[in-house]
Length: 254
Image 1 (cartoon, rainbow, N blue to C red):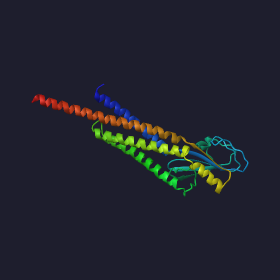
Image 2 (cartoon, helix red, strand yellow):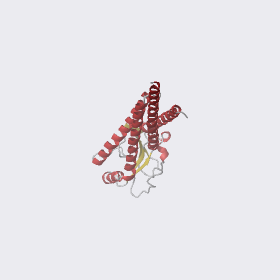
Image 3 (tube, rainbow, N blue to C red):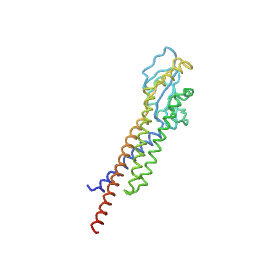
Image 4 (spheres, one colour):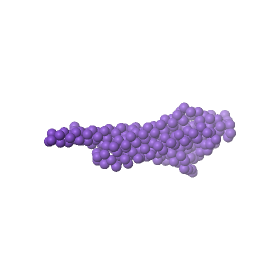
């Protein structure tokens, strides 16, 4: 395969992976299912199931909500048995309340604002997310402006931005996982609610499908960025070889 054909193949796969990663990123950021949660306050002595969202029995209403990067929707169900399928659009009871919200690292409609560590976590989380999203979008525009295999510098810059965006988004996902799985903020919130509002307060959380789309977007963004950098290096090497051939031809003629 000639170098020009090899570059075209690499460019095709880079554009394909870049577009796929951007599509998954839009689906992940544009849907409100990063976090699925339910909270309830039942009568003392009443038995419950496990901590998952699969099944819970309660005499009072259960507040169920799903949260994304921009919107948080919640509703109350009075059913004795509810499952995770209640969180989907086709089975959600009315009325459902949706409000604008940036994903705050706390699964509650009324987060405890006085906890300073949560503010710090939110600031770091927001910086990485905004940087990653901007890097992926700007990198895509830079690659488009590079034209059909003409400017190797723009391909390198666009690829580097795609890699930077992928790394920042990967950090965002890791911080989210750390908050859910490692940090004790959820237990602190549960204890706070038990002490201040309801002794039998229970909180159940689970990752949503929007969250699982984020690692896929990260993978394709990183892969596309590396391929764009490789395309830029290939174009540069071809240009250097062409200049060397022209120089050799001129020397031979002299």
